[in-house]
Length: 639
Image 1: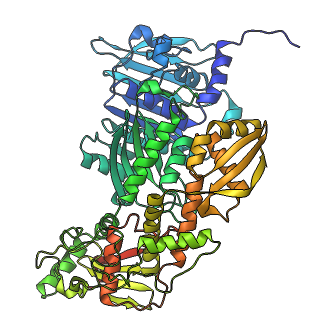
Image 2 (image 1 turned 30 degrees about the vertical axis):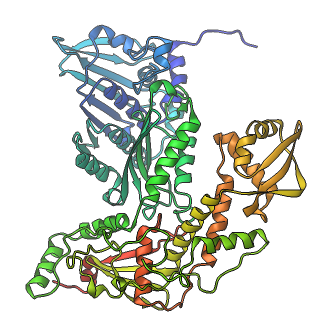
Image 3 (image 1 turned 120 degrees about the vertical axis):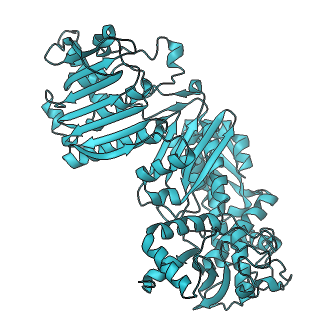
């Protein structure tokens, strides 16, 4: 075996660079973070050939003193921490003191900086085998400029792994996008091959912030989001979450920041998936820009050199807080929230030409343009879960007590479906005709979903609103209404357990057996009574009564797997809700059921009062809006 010897500083830096500098975007990330840590109000990024030929990052921060310039390019040299206590409560983006040394070891680097009160700026350059720093005077305002040229020129093997110029620049652009989303108080610009790609001014007000998000994430995203801001137990979560109808085929519009640092964390991802669980269609992904603020001492950012991962001191608390906040925000979404996004998209596409068309129609004595936001009815509305309409007869209403009959039949081994499950019919003349309820007459405010005017092929309800035509899938809508009522009824009765005639014996690992023993009380709350009868053996004695026909062994193994990975499990709740969703689907109104106008209006009012009514239990949309602007475009009105 060869003798042990000390690595040269250059080789040690190049090894470290393998962890920190993966591609040009990695360099941009480290330099922009340094600029923000220096208190910069403006960060300008310029790249050429995707960042391989040149990366220049300029800021107006505090700068670096001349005496500190050579040290700034040394490994493990930083101004951001000085002791273990500082490391355990890091508030800055950078702290490891490796980035500049790693970058300079695989490129030709020049750093020019000037501090407040300094007579002249100084420039330090590093290049060559021994990485000797050369310092010279320079002209530069207060702040710092870092130039990185010919990335990986001395490590050709690394350069071969780079992608095309377009691909590398896309990564650089994504990096700048994340930093711009993390710091609204700073301005950013990005140039590629002398062409301006982004130029963002500081965004202090909420309107300016939404404009920046619209510029970076797309205006459709910001038009279809719910703003959240919640605080509890020393945690604050705020930001924008997209409506379930605005989902993505990929997880490419998900930005999560912890104390201003963009992270990718499995715990966070799991909490978000839980919150969107029964409102997303198939394998669609939610979109969000969220900011979590915590005490820096309760989160460890020193997990990986790239600093993309963090570890929370109390991960379960953070998981529950994120899940409950998002779950409540999505549950509170009503049709008017979807309606606002749909109207914003539709009306945003039509500008002067559409306004002219509306003006032409008005001049000819036709309809006036819509200029008001629909609102929830202030009078005449009913409490959620009372049926389709405010005054439904007992014979017509499918009450929660009737729904619990399904639970009882399920416990008996089968599901019974009622022939007439829908709460159709109303004695309230207020739902009889949309013509009786203009939005600005008789003190009535127009409901978000308008008023029914017809039924199409026994499948869709057509409603009229000030903004256009609303089309409702009556089965999908009733399915969600029924599902939410069944969940409430089940929650009021609690989850009951039923003993197994013959206990189920499971062979598990020692870790799983110990976990089941430790979390016995929590499992009991889920309706599972599990005992450890051996080092690697568990006995399942009770299971949830509602899941009598489920695969008990697989259910228990899934629960234990969740406990190992996340410290908790919602598997029983998920399976229970899946079963309730199936029951609601079979118990909801079917196609070709002829409804009267009052019945249709009662369905619309129930949708407006029901949580998550924009999607059925399977994530399909329950309604859509065809705006007047879109109808005018179809028929070339005003042209």
